[in-house]
Length: 398
Image 1 (cartoon, rainbow, N blue to C red):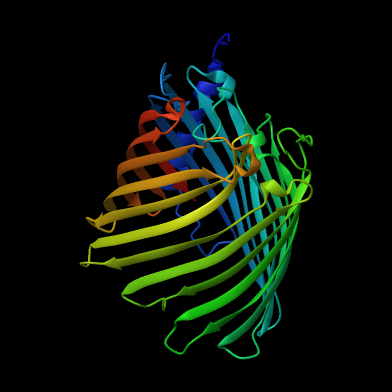
Image 2 (cartoon, rainbow, N blue to C red):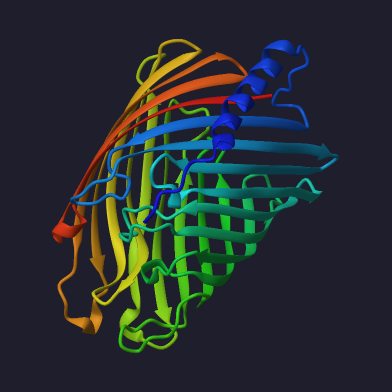
């Protein structure tokens, strides 16, 4: 694939934006804070990645520049509140310029209230991102666009007990063919209860139902690619009091998915997550997370993947302005649901280690450095990879 010359204007606009933001921050005495209706933000991140396609051989390294500009609107009136985030994310590659793209994201929330005990949220959201090459083995760009509309209701006749209900619609589209995680349209309904004890401990039960149709994939009897499915999920969740020294929260769910035509694709399983964090000292925070997730991954030899993961992190607050941290993660991903295909599957063991430094010299500007080392060992050698990346960034808000 030919490499097109980089537009000189695109290289000069980044420093101009940064210098403009810095001049506004340090020259203006009427800087906005978190209580203002309008908040502007901009960030610039430069990443050096030695294996951008996560390949087992013939690795390609590149430099990625991400410029994020955004506006947040936060306005309250009586019992109503409107919160809206708008972001434009420009991602450009130094060598692999065919991957360049600009994402337009928004998240608009109306927190409505008829009475103090009858409240809810109406949300409209769009998120665009590139599909991770960990899952998308083709070396071409695949932009995923997720759009959702949600209405949630909450009725709390007493301070401790709440009844929950909601409806949602989600649309997912891929810019490139990706049958493993194909685009879809879903209609969902959820309902449940939450109970908060006097101690601050919160527990709840939630039922979710979804009906989905595949939007950008043809029915294929040979590969058992279906036209849609129905999914049910039953969840129990809890969280410790917000002022507790030891923060603990978790959830346990049962997922069941049934396809419209090809029952050999049906699957079910238990998923959950448990997260713990605490301050060992006044400046040292420790956290740990263990989880099991299930996600669709439809091929001739698999229907879904089950991932068991554990991660732990240390964060040390050198001062109010500087913090350093380290994070380690290990995950075991098994590709299941082969049904009548009678073919051997695939299992991946992945490790990731990272360290970072954050510096916030003023309330309006912050700088960060992040180093990540990751690798994957798969039962299918083609999916092995080693990767190292270093990123530096600056973020401004006003």
